[in-house]
Image 1: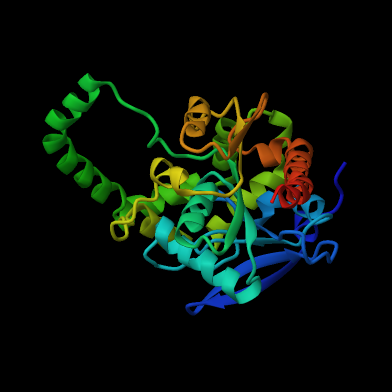
Image 2 (image 1 turned 90 degrees about the horizontal axis):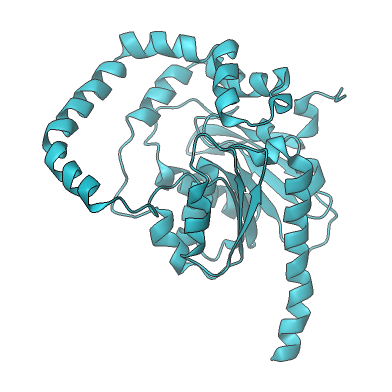
Length: 318
């Protein structure tokens, strides 16, 4: 039975000021071997550094490991900001320039994997490898012709209705009351049951990690800002657009009982880059690093070690 609180199992937590906002991050120094690639872990939506509590120390046995609370999540500031993938890409890049400064392997879960993918595309000098856990991107799905045709017919009517509904639900009077309900630990536990396949992984500690930040001052306004966020610029951050452009090793984990993102997406991603390796995990849902940490940690470390074995062979072939 785990007796040490999660705060003591996530390395040396510190605060960094980014554009005036306090940002929480943590660091596990690793074995001190300079030529081993450092890792930077990025959590999913609604999660934080604490979601990596079963991974940081284990991965840190072979590598220096950093983990970051994206702005608006965890112990980072609950701020009104132009949230979106591009915005978090800027945060991750500035963190890397400030604290790391050499190529890293990005490890992301859910929206963290989307951010990792976008960082690799925007700043290739920063990323030497990617590990993605349940990548939530439907760009690789092809809708039948009749669905696309129906969409073009319905869109002129549906779009203003959806805009009106969004405006109504995000009005402070309605949204703030809804937020008080959805942040309650009992409601969080119900949501986690949809994300996790293994009931034993849904502990009081996990519910605390996911629910506690929602009680911070400004949390409701922050979530409203995220919901109302608009696409930034014309950059296409879809996996369909980015995957074919990357030349780095990539590892994709997928929990086959994921009820939030269809598991059939996993194999579709493989067609877009031969460097992408897929590991499917039975009896796991949307967060396999937390449900099956021993397996995921072992596979990541083995995958990284295979690079070290391949490098001498590649040099001999030159």
